[in-house]
Length: 114
Length: 109
Image 1 (cartoon, rainbow over the protein chains, first blue to last red):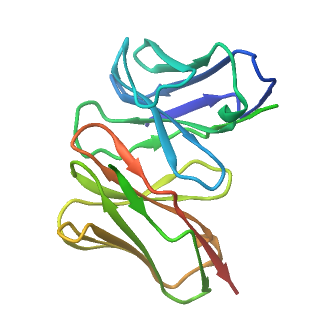
Image 2: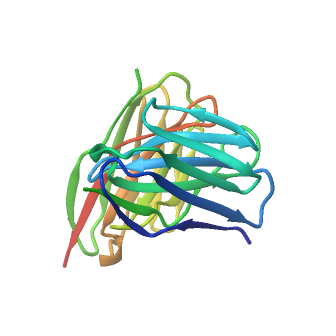
């Protein structure tokens, strides 16, 4: 069966510090991978998605970046965090290919930038 | 532009029925998802509608009208554990989902 891991679960970082959040998926090959951010009481905002190794599409221009160094690994990074980067970060995966596939979410990382 | 509207919050009584509405205006439409999200947790899949009509799955049903840009999630025989946020998401004609802000459902005894 497929599982998705995210870490850390919670993170408190000062403004201006770097960020690295990691997501890995097990039990599937060549999944589509997604990074979302959810601000308190808000919907999910798609940040990045990837359909394969090294293929990253950005939805919202900001100080975040993503990388997919391996098939089932997706990393969200920032060189300098802003206060507005606080939120609940969710990684998700779906089956390979375009189509109407359910997205499966990781447990999320709650980031607080002070 | 992309727009998905849901009520912010609803309250219902244990054992009752509640309908959560979602209206959307998006460029491209493949289908519509409903997800459940308990506080502090990740969303989990409830339903997916592609064609017009009602899809029933146990106590939960989801309805879609593509011509009206409208969907609803119907929850029957409400239980306390149904207290959660319910997210409506439209799948555009690519890999992406556009998400509503969610409806927080409060169940009272």
